[in-house]
Length: 157
Image (cartoon, rainbow, N blue to C red; front, side):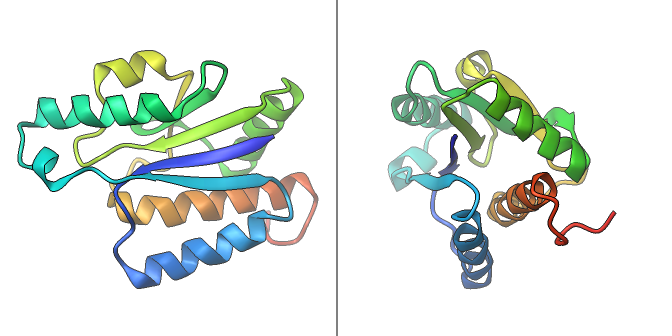
């Protein structure tokens, strides 16, 4: 199964990039993982929120294929334990999902169009994190889920 993470705009902080790169290297042992960064022009950021959401939705939709399973990382989504998330991934693998796409929205979240396109909404926490930090947390949790599925000692129960 191929797994992608769509993110709006680049990760700016070097310390976050270092952590993300470390987990991306580790994930190569478990799945085909890639990150798709959609850089929004500064002119879009000067527009009203509704127009920003519309521009981001168009860009996100253009990266997706019809049979991609889209999971939004959204504060209103379902929460998992790490073991629960690993079981979610296993269920997707067993369902022969070819491409599982996780998406982190821009500063205002997602447009209604993207919510309608989504197959699932997932929350990493009830706490609020910056979009920049969520990238690292997601990569770490994805790695953790695969180590759980493989019975490795990274996750301590």
